[in-house]
Every structure is written in structure tokens, then in C-alpha cells.
Length: 322
Length: 310
Image (tube, rainbow over all chains, first blue to last red; front, top):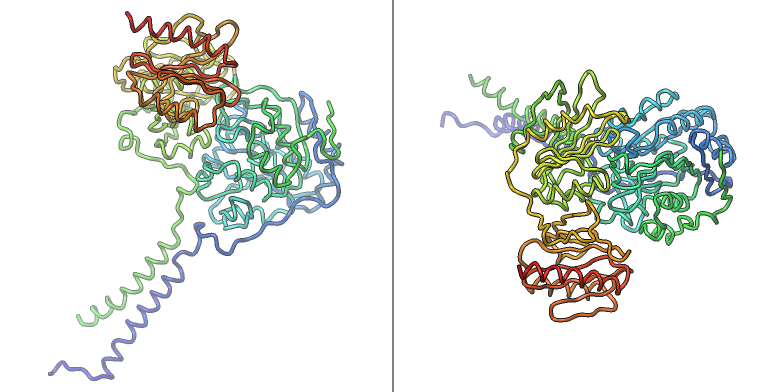
């Protein structure tokens, strides 16, 4: 009976640890699952339409062994870089830098084309960043592909992917309603330019401009392989770029997307610039000796009115040689 | 003493709180960075020396089959088709030469490794040293030995890359081999009219048919028409033939013709036929016309029957 405590004494002793326990539990709930890592598809963010509102040719094709000159000629035929990029614009360039492969394997965009594009945008007064979320280690990919050196030489900056850039974003596609997307770069940008390379792809036939947008996806994007064609078509509708530059300097004709054998790579000597992703990809498919009907996602994109597979008949089409 | 106990009790929630906050801040690097695994624990049979002929191995990573997409996304399914258990990725550096990237695959068996090699070598001249086959072409080398397939790529494009051959040979020689002999039933794929280096082995879903497994094939040119002749590994039974016939109907083949031991038809603009004779399941795929299909079939089936009589 000696140890018996009064009610007041009991309450005085029990309140502080209970309060502390409640505070720790509350803090735990607050700090746990703070979405440092992407999860869930609620609260989807939206990205803007980056296309320009004035009329521009849908497709210009420029042939030439010097593909940098061909790029400049094609941009001029499009109306000049100042038609697309304004002084002070923040331009996000999306090359294909998916693998840590050297340029001659044809698995990534050619460094001189990235360099020329950065130069053009900077000459128009833009701030330029280059982004991709590669399959392999990001820094290794940018170094080995030569895109890091090319970008920095032209005064642009490489933006390496970080987990904190990812957020659930509204895609609004048939198969992809929302996905973990590298939202921060897309939010930063006023203008987006895609520079895909031309290569065969083991799963979807060809990796061209619409497939290039895969590099904005985070999360378990390999799970999209089961629905790769509708997923690529959905990405074609999701990103409305300012400009697409199809880098046909080299063509990876077989064993894509990684390549390997030099026998699989042949010089393309062509650059296609435009605003119609379906026309550009249909032309790109022809470089790989494929018809647009051979590529399912092109058919899906055409059916979704994203563009015209009959690329020679699109508005403003011109083919030039430099 | 009572006070110490009291303070310890009071401290416990704070420790828990700190742990929760710390744990909540953890970032899963695997989201971006391929797994760097302990090779010795994941694939004991692949242990390459750290240094070979003054070449030093760096950035070594093992990607098991289900994670190969982290290295070769989009092309992983090609290797999985041949039962790849994984790939070992590394970079070899030597002060006197440009750096080379290495991808070393372990396939299901010797036939699968051989098939992957043939697929990639295509029409390039193949050289052989003992049991190693290899091709070298402008900064790209592929080799195959036992169940292993090696691919090496120079970071620079150069025509003079003979210097890499000794390294590749040493890599292949350092791999444990099963001693298994090549099972390819060359004798059942006739030499007459065969196109050189066109042999292939497909472990599953050959030509899109799930009934066609462990198939040996080769390209043939007869009377200026080309087709693929194939034969299943080992002895077959009527069930395989029945499953093939069912798939032929299911896939919507047209102009179908059949007997109790043979069925064929037109699919996707080319012709296919398969049949079973004395427990051998074999056929013709990708013939441009029914006439050429039957010409190839007559020659091949006559050959199979003669082999069976021997």
C-alpha cells in the first residue's frame, strides 16, 4: 500500500511519455512516404504545349554528307531558328542518349548534331539544357556518347536525371493515363526540341521521334514493353514539341536499339526537321527500309490524328540537298 | 537510478522518431543505377581475372536475366529467347590502347550460344581457334565458346583493332566450359543447296509458333527460290505435329492442305509446311509460293527418309 500513487501523481507521470509517443507517431506518419521516391498516380501534374502557334512546314528533309550544314539548311527552310526560339527562352533538348555506347555504334544521337542545335538555340538568345533519362548510368551515357562534350562545347548544360525531378504526370493516352515523368525539366522549359537518332528496335520496329520521348519517363518503364506500340503512340500525343530534328547522320539498320556491329550501321547523310511526328517517323522508317504499315505505333498515331504517314504530302514539305 | 530509467524511457520515442525521419529520407539508388552485385555470389562460374595481358577490368556488373533490361533494354528479349541466365558487363582498359566495353552472356547451352553468335555474325567471315569462334570487324568483336557469347566494342572507331584478339581469347579461355559437344544435328540438315553460315537454333516460339521448340534451321536456295528448312531437336511425337496443325488453323492460315503426317498453308504472304516421319518433326518455312514450298519439301523429306533408312 506504501507504493500506491494518487490519481494526480499518475496523470502527471503518464502525460509526458504519452505526449512524446503521440508526437513521434505523428511525425512518423508525416515524414513517411513523402514521395522522395515516385509512387502513386494521384495529383497528376500537367505539362504545357511547347509547339509554336505560327504556321511552320510539317517536314523539311535535307541531304548532305555534312549533316551539320544539312541541319542548318533545314532550319532555314523551316523559317529560321528565330521563328521557334525567342530571346530568353529556356530550351530543353532531348537527344537519344539511352546507352553508354560510343557514337559510331549508332545507338545514340550524333554529338555534332546536338552541338549544332545547342549553338543555334543559343544564337537565338536561349538558355539551353540537354536532358535524357538513359537506360544505363546517366553520366556514363552522356560521356561515352560524346553528347556531354558536344553540349558543353556549345555552351549548353547537361541535366542529369535525379529522382527528385520525377512526379506523377497526366499523359492522357489510351494506355498511359498517367506515369512517373521527369517533370522538373519539362516544367522548367519554355521550348522542347527532340533530336532522335534513326535506329531499328527489337520490340517496336524502329526507334525514332515518338519513341525518343521514353527518355522523359521514370518508374518501371520496362513494364511498358508489353504495350510498347500504344505506349509510344501515347507519348507522341503527350509531348507537343517545338521542333523535332531527326538525326539521320548514321542509321542503325539492325540489332537496335543497342547495336554493336559496325556492319549494322550505315551512313544516312540526312537530317529531317519538322513539327509532324508521324510524318517524321514515317520518313525515318523508310530510311530503315520499313514501310509505315510495318510499324504499329505509327498506325496508332495516325489513327489518333497525330500526323500524316504520307510524309511527302504534308504541308510545306520540301526536300533539299546541301 | 530511478531518474536514469525515467530518462531512458523518455528518450525512446525520440529515438524512434529519429529513425523514422532518417528512414524516410532514404533514396533508392536502384531506381537509376544498375545493380553492382558481388559476382562471386551471383554467378560463381563466371570469374574473370582482374587483369589480363596488361588490360585491367573496371566497372564490372552482373545483370541476371530478369534485370538485363537495365543494360540492354529493348534487346534483352532477344537473348532471353536463347535462355540467357544473365550478362556480365565490364570495361577493359590498357594504357596503350583505347578502352573496350565487354558484354559477356551466359546462354542456356552450347547450341543457344552458337545460335546467338550466328545471328550476330551474319555473313561476316568466322574464324576458329580450337573451340572458340570469333569475328572481328572495325572495333567490334564477337566470340562464342561453349555456352558463352562475348561481345566487345571499342570506344573509338578504327579499322586496325587486331590487338584485341589476345584479350578476347584469354577471356574465353578463362571461362569454365562444360565439355558438352555441339548437339546440332548437321547430318539431318542436308548440305546440298544450303546457304553458307545460315544455321540457326531457336529454343522456343520458332517462327512465331509456340509448338516449335528447340528447332535447328538453315536457309536453302533451290531453283532460285529461298526458304528455311527446320528440324526439331531429338525425337518427336504426334503431339508436336498436332499442336503445330492447331496453331496453323488458329493463326488464320489460308490454302491449308494436310495429310495425317503433314500440314501446310499460306501465312502472311509466305508458305509453311511441317510433318513427322519416323519420329522426326521437320518442315519448310518462308517459301515464296506453294510450288517452291513443295519443291523444297520433296527434297528435304526424301533426305530425311534416306537418313532414317541408314
